[in-house]
Amino acid sequence: MLSGINLDHLAGTGLGLALGMLIGIERGWSLREVSPGARFAGIRTFALIGLAGGLGGVLYQHAKGPAVTLLAGVVGLVVIGYHRVVQSRGLPSGTSAIVALLTLSAGFLAGSGERLLATAIAVVMVLVLSMRNQLHGWVSRLSEAELHSIARFALIATVILPLLPDRGYGPYEAWNPRQLWLLVVLVSGFSFAGYFASRMLGPGRGVVATAAAGAMVSSTAVTAAMATRMKQGDGAPAIAAAAIAAASVVMMLRVLVLVGALAPFALASLALLLAPGILISAAATAWFWRSQPSPDQDSGDVELRNPFDLGPALVLTLLVMVLAVIARWVLAEYGDQGLAVVLAISGTVDVDSAIITMGNLPPGSLAPATAGIVLSIPVVLNTLFKASIGLSLGGWKHAGQAALPLLATALAIMAVCVPAILQAG
Image (cartoon, rainbow, N blue to C red; front, side):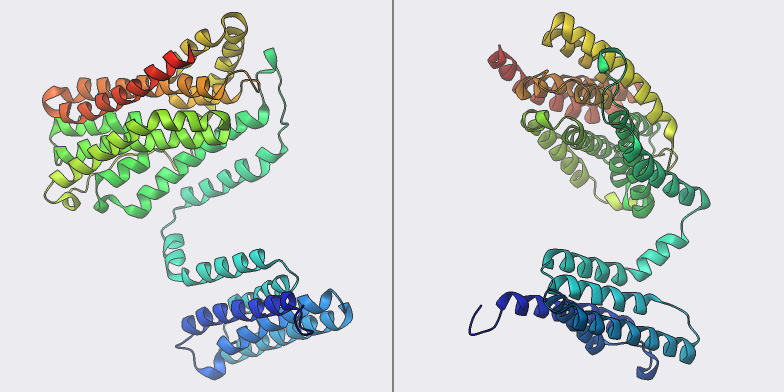
């Protein structure tokens, strides 16, 4: 309170005005070609709507009657304005009317003290409105299969997942339904992200971009595709080598994201162990990319899975269920060393299965440092496995330059892991 003025109320009301003006700028720009008499509202109107919402939020704390009257009056004016625009233009688009109501709500939240939420709503709203052309273009390019895929993914992620119980079942209580279904959601989500990233970027942006997107699903598949491409002489070898190195970077970053989501206690330790490998693979990507005179001319593509394919996710989940029971039995019978062997073998072909198995262990089963070491071993073996795939499919003459960074990446991680193992005793 300063000289009888409540600064908190003043700030909330001012923020409501500012947010309304921000939204009004976007609306004014978007409707700049519409004649003034046919517009629903402009910058001044939206600024005043935000101000009214801010005043309503401040008043509501002390005088609910006047606050409700003010807000209801603004809503009534919005409805009348929308009706007038529909009659004059014959266009029943409700975007500006809905934006006006949301502007009033954001102003009310700002006046009520929820300033961060109010700002977030207004900024996201302006972002969505400003992306009108991009969103319409994206929707127009969607196929029916892709639209169905989006609906199915929304179903498994937002409806089924929250309904599943979050506790252990089965032998050793190794099966947690929510965690197992979270695996299905994550794997499907990575596949989804990779598919649409490739669709948005397009093959014209180069093989490296689509390979990186494909590595969200399977870096091993990307390596096999690129090695075959190199042997067949399809495109520049340096671009294919850059794609393999980029896929390796994405794989390790994806591993860290999965560990952060499913086994966060091991994240810091694992990140330190993988950092040298990430740097080497990233440097190799940049080196191969720069060594090609015109990388953008190469327009090859990496074939990705269906936009929504539950099959691989379910197969991986079944594998994880089996490994979870084995891991708990090994941990009980043989301790940490036996568990490391199980995870290393299971993670050679698919690192994700080792991460999920780790995440399903009882809390406190492994120390964070030990868990990081245990998870780094599958990453090393998987990287060596990809190098062998590249050499077997492409031959040393064609794929040798792509296999060398993979070998260097594995050696760099091992160079950090060995001292860590010795220190852990």
